[in-house]
Length: 492
Image (cartoon, rainbow, N blue to C red; front, side, top):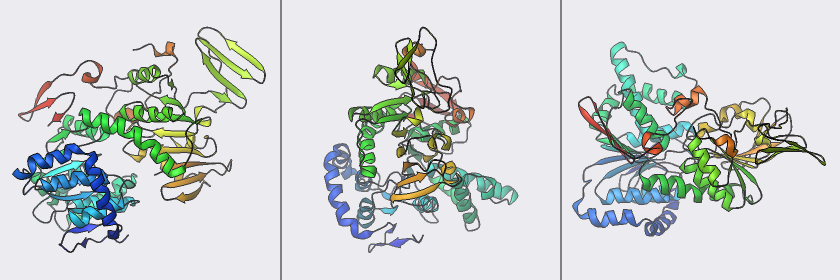
């Protein structure tokens, strides 16, 4: 798609896939309003007083029908809004068209390339020469990241004349971020400083984005106040738990029309998102295996009757199957049963594991490098691999795309079959301290890189104090400002 801004008849900027879908979008928005009484009540209660009158709000959050109701609540309260999606696949084009026509500036369409995605993010932050937004509604922290990296680059440019170098990183997305910032420095070398100075604050919607904010707070690099929306109970339960319980099977069936009953499913991670996914898959008749690093979450999975194993755990080779029965491990070899008693385990010496047995894999961790190409090449033919965590780096797509001889067959948009040359079999990838050993749980171990990514020690603990013990309030002082940290929100 050509990266150029269009304007509506009212002069509002936008870039969407198909404006002819606006009427369809409007019909679905009207249906969604009935399902979102909280936002509609906000319009009724606060609309007359116009608390957001004159406020500029930028959103980087999935451009869906439900988000459309949020956007029109903000405009009903007086705000001027510019919006982009936080995910290249999540936009509903009819929702984007309806909002672009009727309510706000929208830059989003389903199936964006990474270059298009970051262009849209830049457009959503572009309020002209007077600076940027007053408020940001962020989901994953990309809009926040762009401003922070822009300020950093502008300071270096002013000090030494050095421009950002995209070739300094092998991360494709960060190359695009640096390119956007570099190209803008010649036009306005204070662009992101103006945004930073104008901003009142940002709200952050997702687990990984919140972790990044805490990292920036700890390193004293956070440039403006932030609100942790993710840990509010209405978000973490209704979105992460109940929402994912609804959307995972819906997405699987829309993409593949597969019958979930009778399948073996692996859910990587058992936080709120993982809990919702595992519950949905179990209810649909799937046998669910959970991978977890955290003994608390692993115990929760066990109490729900789920098996806890690492992906790398050796459970089969050829016709040999390992079944745990209490403290006994049984290996069936043909018609013979071999039993070891006590603490001894019978396992095969091959390199096949749980990945060769499962039909569906879902990553939910918010970490990185969870399912690697070496896992994928061992999977059974037509195993389904998908991610419902915020970022797509949970799955090693780069390793898959660059695997020698691999063949990509697009079945339909966002549903691809990848065939490995050695076997001519393929996988289907969608849109890109507790004695648990005695209960049968085997925990996954974090790598140092993964632990650093989510700011926890390799050996744990993996949860904040309010999760492990009790909710509380801790007061700290930084730069003569008080920071309030509680179990439900953070104000920096």
